[in-house]
Length: 406
Ligand SMILES: [Zn+2]
Image (cartoon, rainbow, N blue to C red; front, top):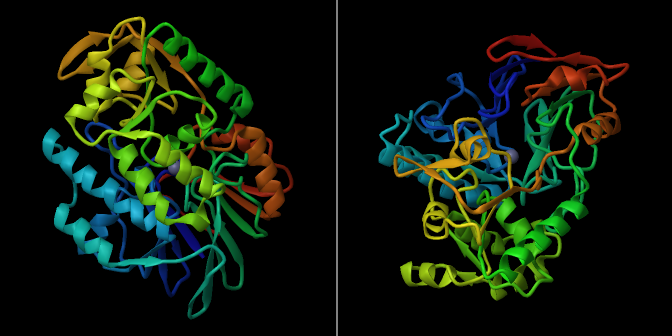
């Protein structure tokens, strides 16, 4: 077999990998970086099937391009397939508003949805000389890694999370010979999750007690829902807005993919949902507003910041802030770009590490647990840090565009 990364090999983001058996070509993930302007992976060759690990744009953002360039089936779990169109239509909308070029249009999103083919955890699909199955990765509701078997066993992880969270169980190793594994947090560890959660709730309480509102930007998929559960045992008045609201509702249809589903359902009933501008006004008088976008690059969060920009209120970032985003600018300079104007943020800004990725030690444990003879490290900027701690295995650090034998 041969493999080639179209993107996301030696970088975090825009992941796409072609696996060639000689007879067939398979594409694993096909994402873009939602920066301004977006960054794209290389163009994919004709493929026989596409396997998507989860609904984050850096893993799915490029799949509509495939609609007019091949038309192979797109496999993913039902929750991934339900959330993907929300993100893809939004990507087209943002590109139009910002006049960024995108290598596809709305009609391509319509068409690619026709190619969506659900696969559930544990189910096996046969492709003549190859069988494929999918297993949970603990990263998002419905996120999965693909196990591929012919004369050799392959495992392609996408993004992985080792610890149990409120909505998901952590990833469990699957036996393989060749392991393609993400390495976003190579060389880095996360603080204990309990401590992060406690600190988060305490910080919100401080804001509320001084009469303020805590604005919590969160990624629509995964993070927003997890944060709701972190606040489950509090009596805060919680509002949810933007795409975070849409995705949270869509996930209500996937009980078997969510740990503590009844609690999640109950939590969604108890929070307040922003449906219109009148609600948006009311939310300004609540305690907590969870809203998109997570990196402050658009969405209702900007409205809340401009309305609540004084030191009484909190602005609590909950995810990694990519370079060239408003969120990163805030952390580095204390200002953000509001409608083209650099605006100083006076709110109490804090960052909480709610990452949905395994840390360095957990990555090593997962790799050991899968018992591979060959490890391909992808989706990382410091892969060497991880590679030097992997013993008795062949380790490959592919570069984008480079074909390698596996
Ligand atoms: Zn992800």
